Length: 227
Image (cartoon, rainbow, N blue to C red; front, side, top):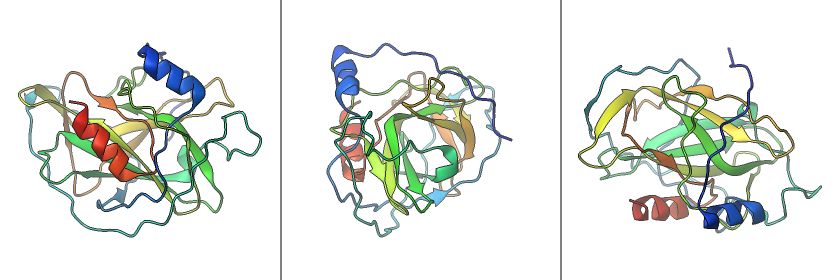
């Protein structure tokens, strides 16, 4: 059963990020290629070990998958022509690791499963464990436009899970919610199981997430630059 909707905690961003959010939100160049294996995941309850453990390498995903040409829009969020905001009912969420990364970063792929376009604003609201009021803060990575995805198209976000040497906590699922500029209530996260190839993640003290982007390589470039 989905959790009751409630407002998110407000985060203080750097000046550059605030200015970028006011002017535009996430997406990158057209035509991103999805060359990472992604598995849509059903909802289930988050599971934490309740303790800490050394960071554990995760399996690498190298399976190629075809990616249709994505469409993004530079129109302001108030435009009447903008596709409506994506909600959890519109999307299938997949997760995968980057090859040779030792499980330090997670790739989140959102696929539009409807027959109409929808828009992903800003960054995904990600939570681990029971702290639903404290989604991960964004990396200062606002892209040039919002991410509007048509039917069967995809958008991407990257999560920095931990740094080498950090103590970590293990989870088998995560919470995700989406920003809707037409509402004052962005909702509480829906629990999503990790894909079979990921199975679990180890999360350090200061995880963070990128903005949504239509180009997987743009997300990858930022994730591995922002250490």
